[in-house]
Image (tube, rainbow, N blue to C red; front, side, top):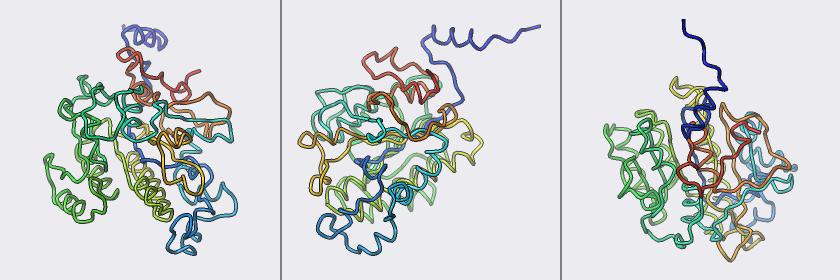
Length: 364
């Protein structure tokens, strides 16, 4: 008769073999919004920006009806109802400096390519100093996982920004990356995907970056068909509208991102392969400047744009809600945290990467 092996013994063996102690998480969804400000996340819509002068708002009464509330707690829930009605009660949210919680990028550049590299690779690289379409010399946590047998053909990445094939270095990687206006051609190309490919190209506003909705819908269609264990999805409208100074359109994009997060989570809980075994990570690549004029920008000239936010919801993450009085969290910790949630030790392979966020993993 075989005896049950003690859990502590299994954990010790797992660590000795270079793996993290296994939790309940088997799948991870990393959903990102380019340049979504922590100020809007924690304080809701800004009255000073809900104007024609400061935010180029076309219909102020409509915008105020949709997003303005007298108290900041009500404003932020009106803007991001899923984050504040679900994640705040069942997961963890970091980045409110008023409560002694900060999340920051460490690359010193405070713009997109360096931010995505830091988050996905686990460290800042001074060689990544522009948004140019240069293949990333670093291996992301997605690529690192894809090289393991358990994750082959189990990772997929979708992004609005057409620089992502270079950030993820598709010339070298073996997992699906669909970005920019590129059609999704991975079989089977269903009538739904054919239509989404057309819509993505026929509704463009910006060069190199389609609207978020067709990107999101394409990712969902692929996800339901192929059921990858790791899904990466990056939206871009928030950053584009912010750079244009359109606070009304920016708020709509933020609200839509929250709706995307809700939909992903509810679909995961409805599918047998994901129910109770999926962790959702919400993150951004950089913050934005402060003030009535500087909110549209970010980068070296806006040092406050290093401040960002992070949220995690899943079966291994204790329900601690909006975090208060916690140590600094850095964007460089996300890669190792994602891997650790899956029971993988990223730091053993990439020691320069930030350490996993212990609280997210339910560890002291």
